[in-house]
Image 1 (tube, rainbow, N blue to C red):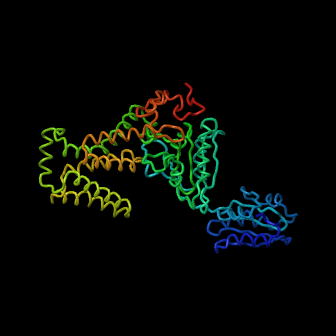
Image 2: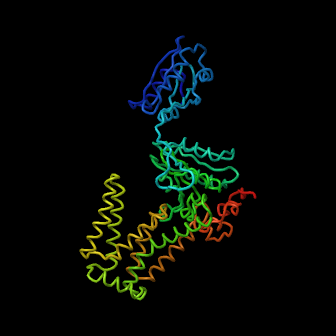
Image 3: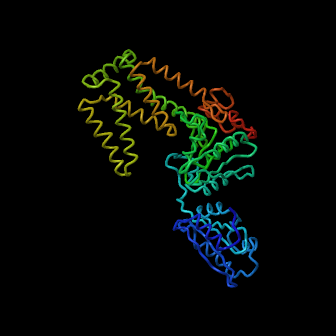
Length: 477
């Protein structure tokens, strides 16, 4: 429905669309008697800025009211015209006041939104000793400015979409024109435009709709809170997605190897980066498989233990009332409960709870003979190892439990079969036409230079071939 040009009628129609009490209207006139009406959302509109940039300049307006002449008198840098009542109501709800005046079939939308943001700080989930300290925040405009500051090129495209019937959340697609495959951009845009949901409070809501296998245990969209990582992935040929209200940015296509890499790897010598990546991989494998092999060895293959270690373990488990599988599951259950409670409780209470759970409860349980010392040591080491790759904690914690159950039921053969199934699943998984396990499967020799082994910067002259970037060269020597 279009506006009619009658000031009172259009103001009443907008107010009918926006009946909430915090949607206010302000009627004023110029000194020559020309009437104007402002409609705005009181909590999210900067009224002081509105008075300085809109009301004050129009008090001396004495010409014929046209959209061009009125907008020229306003001092706001963000003024645009709109004639659709539904879209005008959406602008008001977004914090942009609407200016109506008599005799015009267009209204002016003024950008005087009040923005409440926190300071840009280093994200707590991705701390680096070397490199940039900045992290994304909840405001999409500030986040896009952080991206634009690092990619000062006209090839950077930032396209905005609105997702959510009621939240009408801004979503920004960021990519490099001529580098990112256009088919990938179009595919992501199509999936976002097809989303029909009430509200999008966080970027994690979009991952389910961007995934080819929405119920897969495996991640299919990358995440990061750091602008430097986000821009580096865009420069390789990926599409970045920013969501208003969320500090977590998404990137696609996603490769599993990304979660074993860190931004700090590119600011330290290549041998150090290679060592830390191997360490993360080893820690993750130990975290997933150590409890399972311990149980399998106890139940089916005691000869796997060295004789001295076997004697120590036998002395520790002699009076334990539970079976090895049940004992390990009990300790794992207690660890998960303590971990969840320490995260959800207030900071200082959580620290005290960690001390009580780790020391007092663990020591008491061993002394009382409920669990053995080796079980606590193995689960504690496994829990620490999971956090070596924090972006995969959800997936690897489930895999650890699956391996533990299989080991208690079938033994080492079950672990081997479960591992083969996981590898088969990884080899066949892909998103946006890119294999998740690349560059290992399929094997892409040149991309192995920035996988588990990290070559120096001079050897990374081309972009990853796996991503099928149109502009292949990124470094000229």
